[in-house]
Length: 234
Image (cartoon, rainbow, N blue to C red; front, side, top):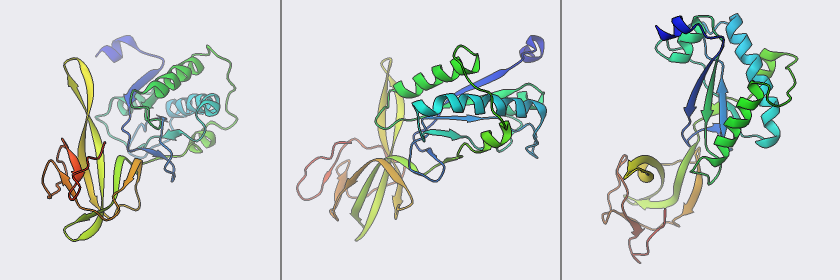
């Protein structure tokens, strides 16, 4: 109701993006990503969508020197229940911003800076150049992948065989501050994934929360080598 009363000329959909996303087929973190959302299930190039693509292409050209190789394009699968898809379907140019991860920067300092720069470019606060072929230049931005994890423990001996353990941080609000709680995300042969940090366990057994059994989804309070009891800092 508010959308139709206000009649905006442009809609911005501002999100944070999880640390699992990389750029294209690489293991480079997607520090910032954009999307011109689909307006329908056919993902048609409607006038409003093309306009949003042109703006993203212009933003990307300006941002590239500040984040070489770290700018991605989010998946454009259509969902009528998504705000951005709905607004685009109403004929209003809509741009999705995804503030992602820069290596080691869990406070999102770099991605916040890039969002600020992107807004400056969008609203012509800084000088930018228009795209020569907005659709082509937009589609040239590599699409995001999901090949990254916060930590991967390599070569862990589990149940008598060597496996990898992927760990993801869950953001929790405690006493007014964000804390990162590690959870076991995946177990197995994870050669197709890369960790923001990787630790080679060299075929040793581990104790997680003082026991040998490892479960996907388990929160990690303590982790150490089984034999030496040496703790692993994650």
